[in-house]
Image 1 (cartoon, rainbow, N blue to C red):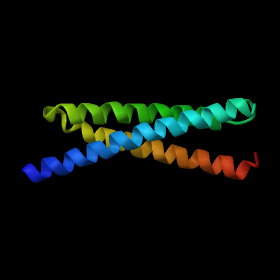
Image 2: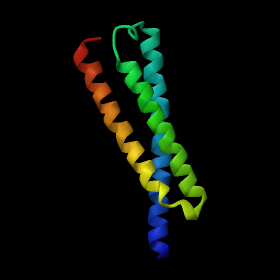
Image 3: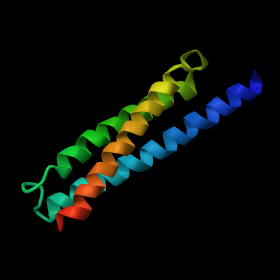
Length: 101
């Protein structure tokens, strides 16, 4: 039982660290699009904005999971939000690469 709790706590820590990093990456992408003045020509910055919200939600839920043992079920939702954020970021990356900016 203690080993399972330790394993779950490690997953929540990785989600927390990864989601905070991805928030920074997403904000940087949005800023670069605003500086390059291509935000009016594409939907990538809107996609990355939604992506940032998923990473913020994932960060918040994993933090709750780390702070309170009774809320360990929330870690599953944090993991799902993180995965959705990664999928959106992959689609945004494909749009950036194949649109020829």
